[in-house]
Image (cartoon, rainbow, N blue to C red; front, side, top):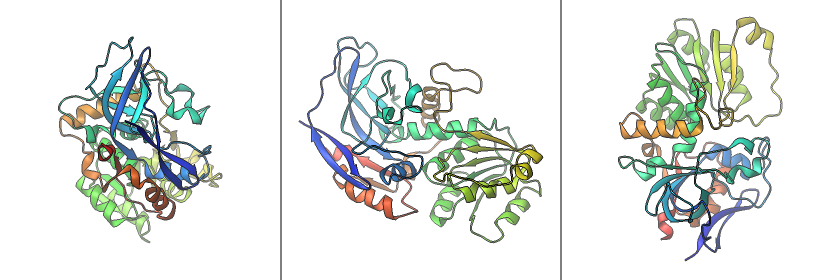
Length: 353
């Protein structure tokens, strides 16, 4: 048997490569992925060497998967072969070694190339009443949890999720669970707006409409939106948000900006109106200890799994295509050329069995 992983050899040039399956030692756990989710926006940026990405070729993309334990090292006590687990920061590959223990992603910000080398864990057991395919979305869903939590959203407040890609649809669901009313989704794609409505949006608007701002004003009774999650990373979208946010409203910056500069009148749109801006990158959170308003990534994994188990969130329903890892090259070619790629792309590693 062989291990297989997707390798970006150069910009937008991916290949499936074979290697030996490693043996776990010490507290290592050998896991076999069943499904890994494509984070289209991030993986597009990294594969194309866009601003704020900085990849070093070759590298293995991907950070969101689920599968099962195959073999454990002699010091492992928490896991056994056959356990189904969330596998994060392992890249798109069939087999990976992970260490048993609590998650720790502390140094990824200062050393981005370590994003697939989480030394203390990265495994969370999947409950029996949650499907493996649904659980594969846990890592990326946790980003959205963080983006909404930053806003300290209160029941009855208006909220708008700008961008309905994979991060946006989870942020929309979390905001709905927090009691946002009205709950507004915004996206240029009619298909994504339709999905947002199915997932609980009261309104799904097109930011390209000439009367977009007027629609928001009418929906919110002229006040503007109290809480906004900006998912697109677009300077134009952020400027729009600054214009329709309510007095003393809050904006969570969940999307990674790919523009080096953002010229705006901060006195007029932020300082003078008491608007709060929150950096909401997934690494802008507590790393090892939970506290009020400081949920760790592992906390959000577990919250996501509980909500899935109770039917209060949807994951696999947003999948647009299940793909064989053997088709990786065409997937990244598509991401490089399609500015509005399919939302839910999943590599199905069971097809290599």
